Image (cartoon, rainbow, N blue to C red; front, top):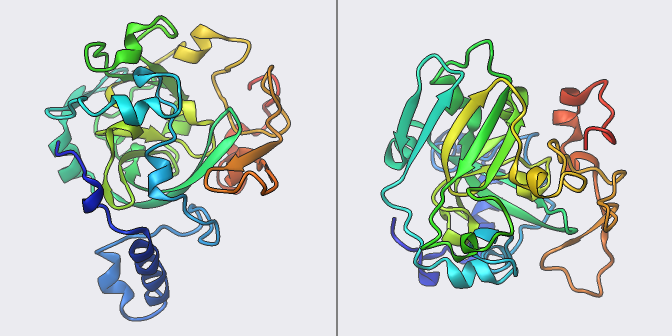
Length: 302
């Protein structure tokens, strides 16, 4: 896949103006034409009043331990990571296992803009204009069996290109998981880009998961395999520190990490003089997803 140059990125002022124009036009007859060019979902979207994080911040402040543990490491160390050719296999408790090339995915599952908050467990957050499609569209092609209760995501393992994988900080390759109904929820997407461009390497190229109501580490990057399984998968962070990182990892201001509070957050791009923001339950998506956890003790199932 072609590496994106800074000069190829749509300037943020133009991008923002285009979004404002699209939103205004949607109320009139032009919406029919514009909708085919740039789709903006409705209530499932982050409010438009929530300012987008600057592109340069999104690509330079990342958690991606495969390229290093510092926030700047992914942008500095991922330049030689090869994202082509690429394929994603879907297997396990399915009626018809399949392997999709990246080109097939792009062709068969057109992306649309999804503006989602991303909240990380350390207490920082971003608002990102992702390009992606609902994961459910992909999973329906393999027809999950009645035994499929969970979905496991496995990222690529290439320690020669991902220098962080040469360390023992995690048991590589990176693994994450969702309950099947969480994976099938329309808010759960496979992202192929942001700001209208292909994903940069440091943000999970060429294809990654985005689950906006969960902490950021649940959104696996550089996915090569998806497995539908009967039993709860042990994820990388559960394996590394089960008392700190539970399977669900829903954004919850009432459940503290053992080493810090989750009650507030800092939006990347804000001044350090700006007050921290109160953390919203389910990262602000409670209306859409709280029904998934009805009757559950979310302090026990953290």
